[in-house]
Image 1 (cartoon, rainbow, N blue to C red):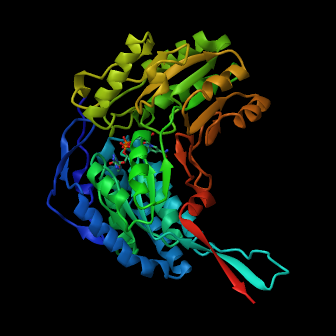
Image 2 (image 1 turned 135 degrees about the vertical axis):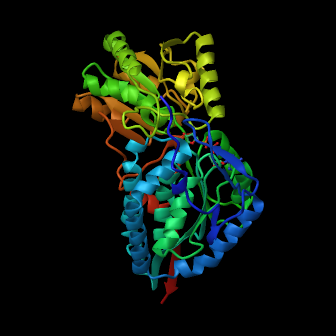
Image 3 (image 1 turned 90 degrees about the vertical axis):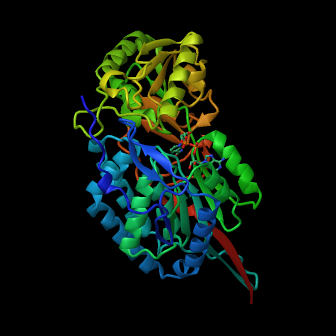
Amino acid sequence: MSIASPDIEALPKSDFIIGKPVNSDGLQGYAHLYPANGEVTRKVSVAGKDEVDMAVRAARAALPGWRNTPPNERRKVMLRFAQLIRENGERFKKVINAENGALFHQLDWFVEWDADLFEYNAGYADKIAGEVVPIWPQQAFDYTLDEPYGVIGILVPWNGPSISFGQMIAPAMASGNVCIIKPTEFAPYSCLFLGELALEAGIPEGVINVIPGNVEAGEALTRHPGVDKLHFTGSGATARKILAGAAENMTPVGLELGGKSARLIFEDCDWQQAVMSVVGTCVGNAGQACIAGSRALVQESIYDKFLADCQAAAGHVKLGDPLAADTMMGPVIHEGHCNRILAMIDHAREEGGEILSGGKREGGDLASGFFVQPTLIADPDNKLEITREEVFGPVVSMIPFKDEEDAIRIANDTVYGLASYIDSTNINTVHRLASRLDAGNVMVNGAVGLPTAAPFGGHKQSGVGRVGGIWGIREFIRTKNVHIAM
Ligand code: NAD
């Protein structure tokens, strides 16, 4: 099987959006590789301190104009942007595929997600109102103003930069902020594409700035005094550095971090759906998902048979060309990440973990890409490193539990708290457990996609704050109190 090349013609034309599109001829260039065949797509420019500084200046220059744009005008231009996203959906999908090897035939959802986020949040633009504070019978009048922070610095990972783009920028813009988004050099294209489209839609220059870059740009943005709020999506290790850097100017930080989410599978589950959910955790985006249910907790009474069925289903997963309609699973982002996942699997073996399926890099026709087989590992005691640390790859640990109490104990025995899943047809079990799982999101009997109107975020070391719905808007406004003596 040969791997088709991604459509390079579809890629955005600019290297940065700093107010307007900027071409910098491979400044500190990074050779971006298509993860499915390891071939260079393009030499991309990587922002340094200077580009960060220019982006902050462009954003600050745009702030008064955008903040003072009548909310109904903000709404209209955001709706135009949403419409353009849909109209350019096919090209958008090609761009996402080229940047991280995502399966083309599964990308309609990504287009809809960003368009929907801009539409949904546009509706809030003219509905952000303050409150009158009841202080009678004092001779005074007291009210609140909900105001934008100003310049928002947004740092995003490579697994779904276009998702983060809509999640953060749509609510930030609706509430009158301007944004600088920094995707990584590993997946720079979709944010640049959306940045170009935003200008075409009539969003004023400087409201959305896009500067792909690595740690240097990240640190510069984090410590820049011209940034009023930071929003970081990424790993806990980086979050600690961001918090330390942001402390210099006491810049507030929202955090969307990783997880080690548990899926609780009871003997009364919808069997087929539960099996597909476990294997699907490895398969979807090659396991590179923050909300991956990477610990499958299975009731003892069904443990052996359930494992056998998951093994069989994992064996049928077809890895291959992300542009082919029958491919079920694609590559991970790059060679370094591939090696990190394989090293974690090797370590699990050394620690006594039983590899039930997969565990290797794909060879043969796929050897030049970064393909890791869907991997299931039995860990009866919930104690292997691979069960406790986020892998961010196609690996699920299988752990038996006795009863509800035992399931809750194991599920909450982690420093993370992003998502949790319950597979049970007993509504009483579901409600009892939903309130006891220490996680920001509980998903029951399969997930049909995250609703735009719902809050999303983590407990414990999985994050601070929420995106989505009115909760997402609140992340980007700060409340001022006005007190008038009469
Ligand atoms: P990462 O933490 O390495 O990088 C994230 C971002 O921070 C990138 O833009 C990177 O360039 C930047 N960065 C790295 N070091 C920095 C530093 N010292 N100072 C400032 N910026 C720095 O994460 P990653 O490997 O790109 O992504 C994987 C992680 O992201 C996983 O932990 C995953 O769970 C998490 N994630 C969370 C969510 C969520 O919504 N909760 C969504 C997607 C991914």
